[in-house]
Amino acid sequence: MSSTTELLKTPLHPWHHDNGGRLVDFAGWSMPVQYTSIIEEHNACRNGAGLFDVSHMGRFFFADPNACEFLNGLTTRRVHPMAAGKIRYSLMTKEDGGVLDDVLVYHLQDTTGAPFCFMVVNASNRQKILDWLTQHGDLEKLGFEDRTTKTAMIAVQGPRALEIMDPLCETAPSTLTYYHGMMTKVCGVDSIVSRTGYTGEDGCELTVPADDAIQIWTSVLEKAKAVGGGAVGLAARDTLRLEAAMPLYGHELTETVNPAQVDVKFAINLKDRQFPGRDAIAAARKDNTLPRRVGLVMEGKRAAREHSLIYLGDQQVGEVTSGTFSPTLQRPIAMGFMNMEHLEIGTEVEIDIRGKRLPARVCQLPFYSRG
Amino acid sequence: MNQEELLYAPTHEWVHVGEDGIATIGITDFAVEQLTDLVYMELPDVGATVTAGEEFGEVESVKAVSPLYSPISGEVIEVNSGLPDELEVLGTDAFGAGWIAKIKMDGGAPESLLNHTTYKTQIAGEG
Image 1 (cartoon, helix red, strand yellow):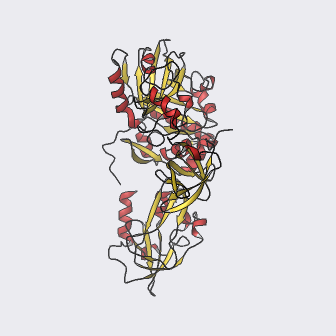
Image 2 (cartoon, each protein chain N blue to C red):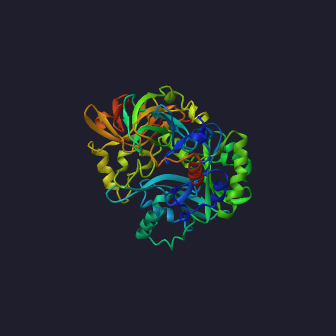
Image 3 (tube, rainbow over the protein chains, first blue to last red):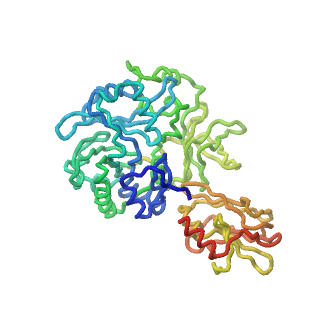
């Protein structure tokens, strides 16, 4: 087993260590990949409420709300003007359209009513995005502060998530509409609460001071356990997001993928806007030779995995970027990129799984959506 | 199988060497616990030749695929063909009903295999 001594640790790391978390290196952080069984954790989130330590995600704070206007010059989607209380999912792209990261931009008000801007980025891209922002603006003037290590971020996800969180918060998260956020007290501590997530379930995410993280985590966990929920590791986070067909940076989103290929129209707005990569996205939308994101289902138990090749007869027509055995659907599912002419729902293809060609079928995304 | 009489590969396969030169192989309860959420197992073909230290099959969990390494060399004479359909057996009886294959051994067991005590020491450092 590799040493985890030099890895970054979240404020919840001692809890994971003491509660059966299998700790692995994830983007330079020692993170729990699972506590018990991936399938049990997956189902606890789908049926009750799952708690996820997502403190490894980068959290950038901007005291000056004009930061939203600055970020709007770099995001594929409009994040300014945006009413206070709103949060938007967006991509950041290079001039050639390659994806630098997918991010959440928050425009919120602090407890005194003063507006501020907040952004959540992927752990693996924190330094890259920080460099990118530094290149494009005066971060000091925007009151920038990297709060990643000063705070913890806890996702509470599942059909019972809001009902357990409401009594723990000064203002109930259920009063928020989807993709909205606020500052409120969680277990008595000033926190950012947003109705966001990465599982396909309803729920919220909490950004809390590092020193209060374990107390808040254990309070929420107690409530979650009472509704059949529990702590969920990164492995089940991946199966949950994959069933919900949410792209994952490093898999469906990379610096060599153009957003037009990924089918994330909701995250792109080119109209009357300028940002790096805008023209490349506009051109890629019209380019039918570029492969597009696809969903595939298979029979049996053997799952296609990242880099498995997709064939139609003898012709290679695509490649898998994420694949797993779906605990909810009880069959293997995969996302990947395939040539446009074969994307029709129901198209039968074959996936090469370590030397064996197994049948797969193009299906509608997402694989799972909550009832 | 009496676990104390088995030999173990550092890659978590066990082997029972019979007096007739027939070895039974499987994976340890520690391996099963580490893998968790098993969904699929690929068995070797009867008649296939396996080589100590080389891959002879694979086991797949929700998260990942792991190769199975043969602890010994020889010819596969029987496989537990029902096992892939009831992988939960590995969770309850990895050293018995969870056996994977019987091998007609070509020579003796490699000296690199561990005895029960040594194997226990190894996994104490991994778990």
